[in-house]
Figure 1 (spheres, helix red, strand yellow):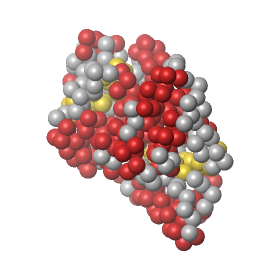
Figure 2 (tube, one colour; figure 1 turned 90 degrees about the vertical axis):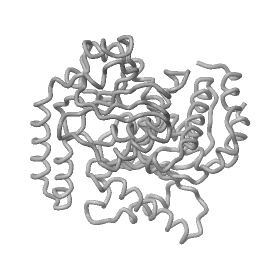
Figure 3 (cartoon, one colour; figure 1 turned 180 degrees about the vertical axis):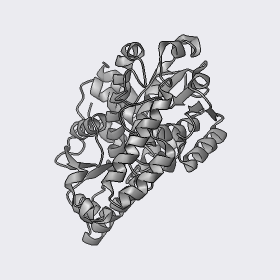
Length: 383
């Protein structure tokens, strides 16, 4: 917990000149925001966390509706969206993608306009099909923007990517904020292993590892990606990782084993994702609405995963990290006994909850910087 004076000190550090350019901004990919803009956003997230810990309410947007449209399952992100909206004084509205008319031919632009006419912010999760999720979000944004322009409506309705086929921005930003708290001396120069890990449950999207490798090298981290053959990530994202590392003085490398990635690492992030070729096959099966083929692809992915059951974060691998005590991170839920052993998970459980809780404040920050004029002054007025 923090005192009111401590919370005020955090808010006072915010820069109005850096906040103003973020007015009206949506977040569809972290790569579309500069490093300075991301740092400003995370500073705002830390300010909201400090206010929350000091029991200072932040009802900046009373009587507003914040919609979140989910085409995939979620626990933490739904909870984070609802918690963020409620803390800002808004009412969260969670919409199940299967309950929309999208499967009946309604376009993303039409969906955006229909929901946007009542919304004051919109989050979208659409992550399972390569080439479709982020494109859907951009079309939905166009639908909202066109509706607002056509009706002379002055509302600002930011779109927040709650996970797509390319990126998981709120997760990656929450992870970066947790790293900044865990390493107060700075994250630059720290080594993180972003490794594939075995999962028997389902062929998970590529967007969590892609979000990490496209974001963290930009802040001077040494990012090691490790995966079995065939579990590649989108080539364009690998290029982003290399560019970010070159610009910041960090590095991005691809290791050929989990052991090589873990060796002397400061942080480990073992996480499963689906085989790249089968994720591409999903595209055609989805467009053909071939549910049988989709089930077959899923079964093939899980069968291929079985070849790599030794890709697990265990005590022996953790012992090879920096001083044998690397920070273990995961977006959750983790497949215990597959991605990670129960012993490693038990030791990290509280830290993982704190990592997950950062997403609430990242979403609050995204909505506030987009919608609130003179945000710093509004927050200082709460004291």
